[in-house]
Image (cartoon, rainbow, N blue to C red):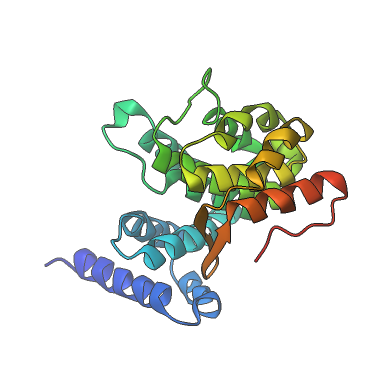
Length: 237
């Protein structure tokens, strides 16, 4: 085994140990002892980990690592973003697991990358653009949209008219996340369908670093309506 292979395995073990730690949020700073691009490359492989908690924490850690990378080598960060985009392209031969979530997380953490890639991210909602037809990918896309809408809603104005179709999805996670996004972005044209969703007793599991929340769609729709009416409702917790 080469030295590079041994070093790579050692780094992966250390990254996994951070992601598994009960105090993940505090331990994540340990990853910054290593070159950001190496951490990013390890985290790419962990987006396919069979453990749901590790997969989602890899998304969080990748956002932080990409923010660090962009601050020192923006072109390298752009290469990673293009790699994520390519994974969502039919020509890639893959499915792009984790790519929409990571894109949303990265743009939430880094303003410069958000300015460059928000329009492309929105295009994945659009049937006339790079629409993601596969519902499991739509879940990740809408989760990323919610993340970005909390901090940088001004970049997502063109997403509003595209959200309506997702509120009618047969997938509860897609419906619930779309309701959250509609409220955060104050999409008043969604008011009637949000009212209808207040009777939706379906539940969904949402990742909120470092763990998960279980929410009822009807409650999320009511909170979204509260944001439309007075802007005071909270969509956290």
